[in-house]
Structures are given as C-alpha cells and as structure tokens.
Amino acid sequence: MRAKITYFATAAVLVFYFVLVGSRGLMLIRHGTLLTVTFGVAVLILPVIGVWFLWKNTQFVRRANALAAELDAEGGLPVDDLARTPSGRIDRDAADAVFTKRREETEDAPDDWRAWFRLAVAYQDARDTPRARKAMQRAIALRASKPQSSPSGV
Image 1: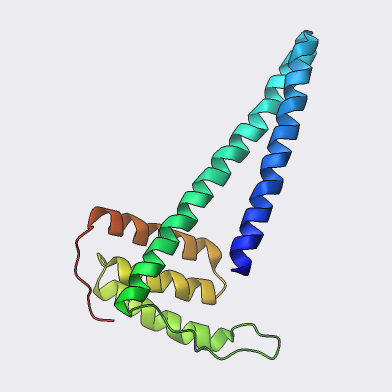
Image 2: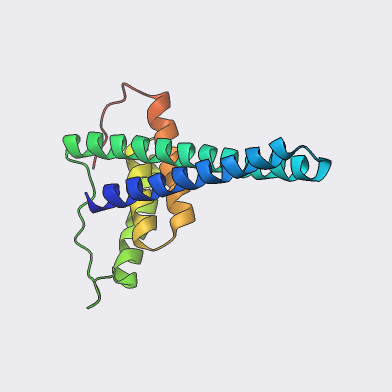
C-alpha cells in the first residue's frame, strides 16, 4: 500500500510539473518572437515526453500487478523468505542462489510467463533492476500472447 501511495504522489507531482512547464511553454509561444516561439516549442516537448513516460510506466506496473495477482491466485507467487542483513536488505548470496534456480527454470520453460515473472523477481532481489524490468516485460508479453495457458509446475 505504501508503494501505491508513493507512486500516486509522485505521479501527481509530475503532472503538476508538466502543467506548469506546459503553461510556460505556451507563454513563450504567445510572446511571438522567433526565439521565444522556438524555446516555447522546445519546452512543450518536455511535458509530452514526461506524460508518455509516465503512461508507459503506469501500464507496465498495472500489467505486472495483474500477473502477480493471477500467479498468487494459482499459488505460484515466489515466497519472500530470503536472508536479510541487519538493515533489512536482502542478502546478496541468498539472492544469487535463488536467481540461479529461477534462471534454470526459465531456461527449461522459455515460453512460460510464470517462470519469467519469478525470474524478474529474482533479478529484483539481486538488485539488477534493468534485467528485472526486461524479464517482467517478457512475462507480460508471453501472458498476453497466451491468455488461456495452463499453469506449469511451480
């Protein structure tokens, strides 16, 4: 729940920023000189890119959460029982051991979105966010291409 609140608060701040920057871009365009119109158009590009980025990330999170809910309903959601440091971070050696197992499962069933989902979680536990995101995108794509697939071994 805390993550959702943080996400929505950040999104609200970004939307406020986009509106503020967009209004400044429009003010520059209304000024009418070649220089201000050029800067105004350049300034308007930033909120457009920001809105697109926010939209794509929101879609990604919603799809990943839908997969998590489906996997949880099937009883296949990875259990978070990894050893932790005194500060609460996941122990790197424990994460690496689980990652090896999840990678092997994914190699054995490369078309199973569930295996890719669990691999993404293992990447995230190992603090490799870029690969975690790519693995989750693969899981989302596989799930979208096979809406009626049956659960495989967990």
